[in-house]
Amino acid sequence: MNSRNVLLVVLDPVPEEEIRHAIADRSDGADVNVHVVAPAAHVGKFQWLTGADDDARAEAAELADRTAEAVDAEVETEVGEHDPLLAVQDALALFPADEILVAGNPDAKTEAGLASLGRPISRVGGGGFSGEEAGGTERFAHEVAEGHADETPFVIVGTVAAFIFCVIGLVSLIAFLVFWLV
Image (cartoon, rainbow, N blue to C red):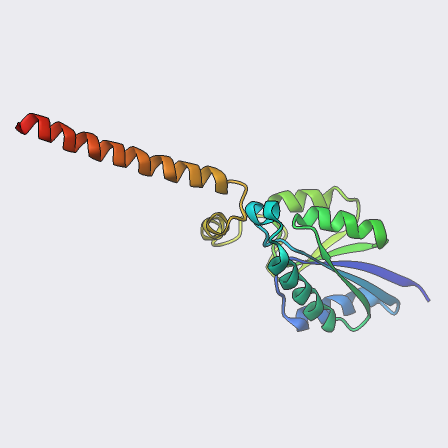
């Protein structure tokens, strides 16, 4: 009997029934071995630099375990790097996957990177595999506010600079009015 190896990359929570159905579709009478990798993706640059990524790794471990419980096959779990593409590459080094199944919504960079790995890619939960998702602006703003976006340092510096500029302008206006009225 043949066996099929499926690497299940969990980016977002997906209903158990969808996971169960997606794995069952891949069995085709063969044994299915599933390796679940959940990237610790909710680690901001500041958290990563300071080593304060324990909460994100614990959250990813919980997500991997919940997903593994939904799989009716032999399954292993792993918490991966904060970059989903690095997490997948690390998992592929240890688990010879025949297919990559993505649970959730990858960003454009991750999509392109996964496509370059030379394995069939499919998705469960979250819609199609291309195009801009609804609420992209809100999601970006949320990622910047939490420190997860690459642009966060620039937004912080820009905001502080704008505040200082406004304070200097206000002080200059007050000084101008005081000298003009005196």
